[in-house]
Length: 296
Length: 324
Picture 1: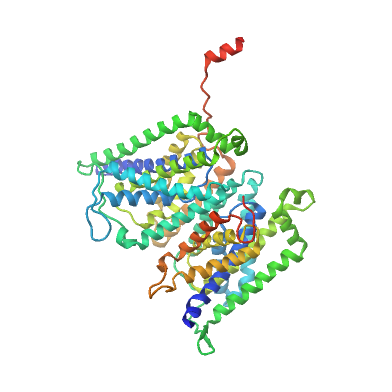
Picture 2 (picture 1 turned 90 degrees about the horizontal axis):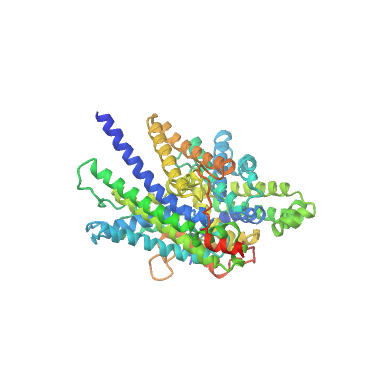
């Protein structure tokens, strides 16, 4: 029982919160800018490497430099939007999807060019997990990641439900034409979407890097689970994305638990396939997702 | 003389690989150019074709499934059929929805294939890959074996090109264009959009599998890295956009052109010292990505823009009706 919690459920929750943060950005871009952003995983990657460099220079804890890394990442993302996505605002959305697909490879290859492809560690050394009630093992990094993720999710909730720009974002996600007619500055809303998405992606990437390591494929590996989480929760539903992220993170970890007999239920090599299976199942059963999102 | 002969062989290999990419590019042209579908998992269908054809033709081996030693005709056909069935099932889930979903699903399916090829060691020898794949005409003396293989690839392109051109100017092709341009009016005209899209998607994926089968036999080796989304999927997209989508000649030209630039620049950067050679390899990807963006924004029609087929003129009936 404790083995189940310590080695499957808790890692699943940690991974799930990371997916959740990334999926919020995906779901916002999908519903406000109306396209599936293939470069979102690479935004994450860029954020991680910027954080890595800042940590190397300053010697501070990654979470302390995270806000600065997020600002730098967001600046790059806004630049990308201006140069590569904005020209297609009035074109069929599939053009932006192609542009973001190209951007995915451009950002990744730039990261590989600048930082190289060797594995890196965000935090040196191995931390010993703390033991509660004799058997519950929690490592400090996992507690830190979950706490920070919860703070960020609450911040997003506050932004979307209490602030003016947040309400404008929700309005534009519901109906861009109506939002424009009511005098909402749509370009400003789009900027805010990139800011929120970019900052959350940086945070998610850095949490993943703290939990595991840094490599140049991490963004691409995150892409499918993040899309799956956004679709599972319903496009345009940030809290759906959080729920979807948690479900997929936990499902991925639990899929290799020996539910029947002694062998893992699913060969751990196929962990990455769980998100895909859930996504296809959802598209078949209910494309609007668990929380009645949009279907395009 | 030796150097000249080496250059000659390089030219043949350039044309052969360029030709295989042209098949991929023609396959994508059916999906994107004619039907308006975004396939982000070209590499997956390519790899399926490669593995199916490889496993059906290899001699018995302890490392992987094999020993069927079937003729190439059968293995190529099987590769296309398997890919077509997989495409059909993906299409069944996604073609009802907007093309973004198909893009996400195809990138996912390519990843799943990679996992299968990596993990099902009993069948595919896992990450070490399948080697000793037979190659058509390999018993011929050099350079004739290479030339004969190139001839096979070029013949395949010619056949596919002629078939696609016929399809394009047929009523089927015009319905495809109608759906791509204005889905709602095509629907109003009573066309079953999902069925036409499915046909475009499946045929495109079958061509991609054919290209995969060619690569497996050409290189005599295949491993899970064949599904690396970079080399296959992305290059093919660049080829089609640069060459000109919805134009079959553009698709072919784009493939040869981009492959030549890609391959030649690899030779240039590989001469750089150590770490620099590895890093500039990534710079190449960046630049080819930039080229895609520039074409997408500034020259969306590509080198050969789309030419709409003229509807067949029925002079008699027209003449009669004008008299009336």
